[in-house]
Length: 185
Image 1 (cartoon, helix red, strand yellow):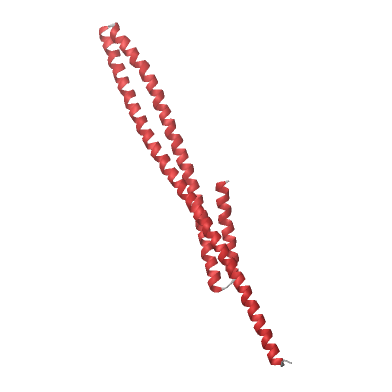
Image 2 (cartoon, one colour):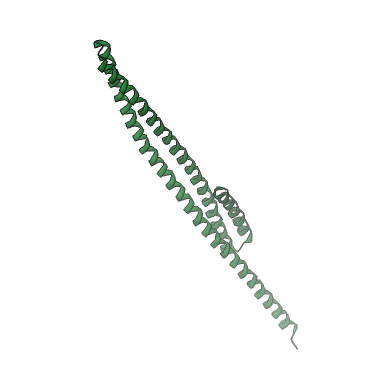
């Protein structure tokens, strides 16, 4: 038969082992959720970088297209100058050859003007797409920061062994996840 001291000692030891087991389970869940948070943070960061790359490419396309449009407008101006020269020559000489040349340049400049305007529309489209991608990059960046903060708070909960920090980290992780999902979907 056990003495009351031995019996009480066994109860205390069993309670301590049970409590330690529960803490280890809790730390397992903290570790698992922190790992999931880190994986999502990496995915969000990847998407953020994808959109910043798209932004840069769109800006580059806008600049190249604007250069083409500027060249086209220069070509247009050259046609206008030639048309004016032949119009003046016709007005002075009344030579039909000059009038025909003036009309030819007038027709050519109209097509060049349309082409230049189309290029400028493309520039606007590239700019709008670039702005859109930059905004998406910003929202992914915000989601990534929120998720990284949740990882830091989860780490604090493991170090201090206080569940309240883990719950806060889960809450902030959910906010970051929602921001991410809104952008993806």
